[in-house]
Each structure stands twice: as C-alpha cells, then as structure tokens.
Length: 246
Image (cartoon, rainbow, N blue to C red):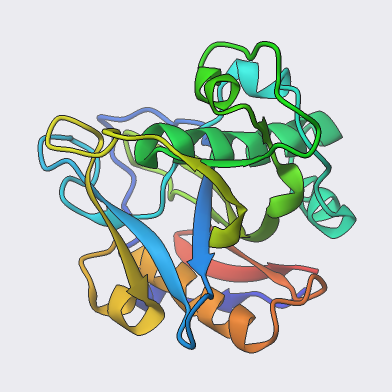
C-alpha cells in the first residue's frame, strides 16, 4: 500500500480543546454522472446559505447513515469489488454495513434532490421504512446495482463534526423518478446544477469535493473499470494522506 502526503492541498485542522475527540460518523455521498452528451456532467447541489455546515457550497448529495437503512427492501446487489472494499479498514466490517452505506447515499440523494435511484423491474414495494416513503410512492425499489464505490474520506480530528464518508457513483440513466418541489429556498439544497468536471472544479466546492472530482475525472478517463483502486483520504499524525483501497 502506497500512501501519498497531500497535506499541501488540505487545511488540516489543529486539535481544538473545545471539541473533545469525536469518532467519525458513517456517511455516504452519491456522484451522479450524466454521460448522455460527449462531455460528462456531474450533479451538485448548493447548500442553503442559512445552514451552519458548509453554507452556500456546492456539494454532492449525501449524509449520515440512518438505522433504517439496514432494513430496506432493495433491488439487486452491490458488485463484489465494492462490497469487499467497503469492508476494509473498519472496526466491525459486515455486508449489512456496506449495504447500509450504499442505501444511505440513495436515500439522501432522494431527500435532497428528489431523484429516485430505483428499479421497477421487481414490481412496486408494498411498504417502506420511515424515510423511504418516496420509493413506495414512486413504485420503485432502491437499486443497489446502480452504484459503485469510488472514494472514501474521513474528516480530520479537531472538528465539531466528523464523517467517515463513502463516495458512490451512478449513471443518471438510473434515475427512475423525479419528485417535484424538493429543492428550493427553504430546503437543504437551494438549487441543483449539472456541471462538466472542468466547470465543477472551478465552482465554489469544498476542498475534498474538488479532490474527489479529480478522482472521478481520472476514473472516467480510465473507463470506470471496477478494478481501479479506490482513493482513501485520512489524517495520520497531523498529515492528510491519500491511500488506496485495492
């Protein structure tokens, strides 16, 4: 395993005694890619300026894992390579945890953008857990087969909020339904934007989002092959390191 020091690109937080050590919370993000035109575009949402966490920034949809994400009826399975990598470098690895991470990315994307990443090939679900009602209304099961695991990043210590975020990628053609009136002035996202990777890297995005955009660009240029390594950004001894999950 090769680790590369990328601290020059990241403002690594110094320990803050006002914040006791916080264990990173499992979280997941979905990178939707529209490849219908010659130049791929990715979906970013602008966070509401009234929010305390990254106000006004353009980010991928996502959020923390909820308990009910482990008990959702689904369509299909994650690919075996993603399943294996999602279980690396974790204290209690399990297929259930890997599945919940992918499902959190799907649920959060629906909650923040109104886009349902699902399938109707197995019919319509009779009922769904709390937080998943939109899928029952859309008549679609969340589609795990649509996702692949492409990156991981852990928030440095010393911050009031810490996340162990897994980044998934899916093609925009996997959108089965669009809910109206989800994005707006009173919502978590005030607008959505489909941007080319070049446009996205010039936009008002967090540093880690910029880094992941570069990773996505490299991955797409390499044909998005499942065996391509997954970058893992983590702070070690006060330095931000980029490692690879093989």
